[in-house]
Length: 139
Image (cartoon, rainbow, N blue to C red; front, side, top):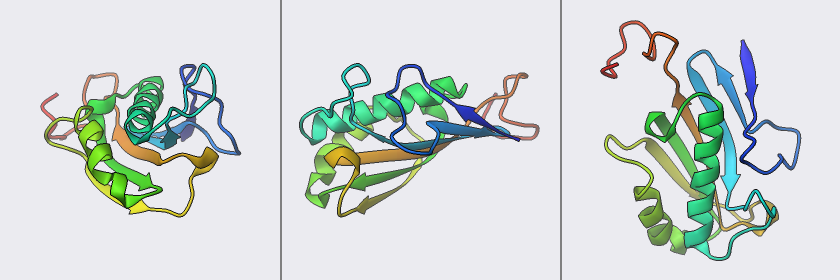
């Protein structure tokens, strides 16, 4: 059964969607942009927005009983593909090997005029401390 994930460290959703959804041992996190949850304003520049988007993503994961190290797949949406090298540089500081699978897509426009939006899917360990029986995650 699916369960809503709400992060108290994130700004309110700006539409009819959840910060995230837990389903079994998976956590699906909605796209996060570089908004400061305290002011609800976007940070300036691709570097700062990417960092904040990933912090927001991390906060939702933690609210869903997971963490950044359990991310399986991300999708990155960029308003300008020329920002890819800077986004990639910041992104690399949040993840370690084995890196999540990823798609990066240039889009025409993002909410609030954001430069980047990042969504993900992650697993969460069950109460026994493992993602499920027979897994190979060295629990």
